Length: 382
Length: 93
Image 1 (cartoon, rainbow over the protein chains, first blue to last red):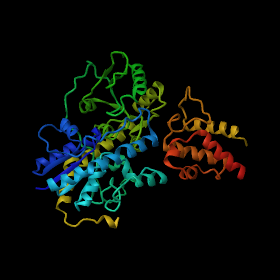
Image 2: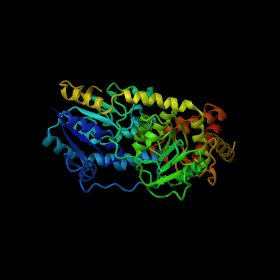
Image 3: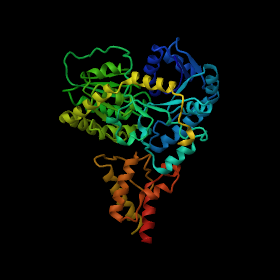
Image 4: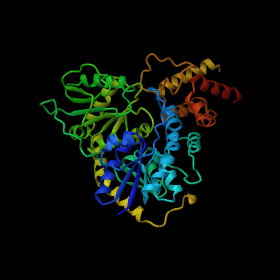
């Protein structure tokens, strides 16, 4: 039995792949403690999970302007969220390590304090790469230098996004591409599908090809125009059925073959879908490809542009410009994918790679090996 | 070559980069922001850099121009900044 401390930022998509991993660790008799924003974690993990709150109530984040994209969004993310979050979490994480005595710290790529606290304490730490975008160092040199300047604790940790001991990448090389595979500590465990939250009953009696439209959890305001354009494109294609996830209720009335709903049981719909239109969020893309669905990707910000490029390079989808795409562009992309079986074939290849990658069980195998290891790669040699 | 001429030509190159996407109500002027107005992505800047070098010669080095700038300067980069750089380089060529 080993003891694991799992550190996450309060971001839904970053908790997603670690939940099944934590469940498998616990099922194999290991002790698991979560560290992060206490109440936020409690609401999501339920009353039984062991949670160490290490985000002080005084930590607040200014609202991100809805239109923020590109490098401006990256600067906001790093300077106004990740760096202050690391500073705020560090004292609580030090206390968590003293109290829970973990053998291994597992820290999300955006919870830098997990790496800092583990390295200070001389503990092995694993990176949870909830997106594969950072693994290929996607930034030009001056952006790279700026980012490095935002890492505190350089004496302990060269780069809190990339553990020298173990990086769990919840993707597969068939999608991420050769550029992302350079770090020797990366283990490609593939996507980790969530335990299905619910069934889905199709509102239509006939089995037309089904299109799912979703922009994830972070882009309700930003996505209004794009969602309406999607609705327009799909309304004009009565040969299809469509489910549009519209949490902000911004899409107006649609014809009978287009179902607009604030919440979608995504896993259940993905099983039945034939095509997904999304923002190229890493979880949505890998979950879609887990089910072998080709994609229309319209990246909004952050890692999404990198993930969208991966989808296109792998041949599994068509990319659109989120800011400028109209119903005509979206409709043409849907028609292109439906007309050329090569997209579905590429998606099926990635589906096979995902299912062979091992998922949560494979992640647990690597974490157990790290907990058993007695000789670590010293940080200073990197 | 005047800045106005260069500005108009860069506008054409930008439309080429955004191939197939109508900017609609967004005119390309010296005040147009690559990030906020055009929603340019890093790959678009790479493509624009290639087009600029093809049009004006290898003395126009967009990657070098960008690498001399801070993150804030890249975020606020406007078409006029690029037109000014190209004009100045052409004058010194």
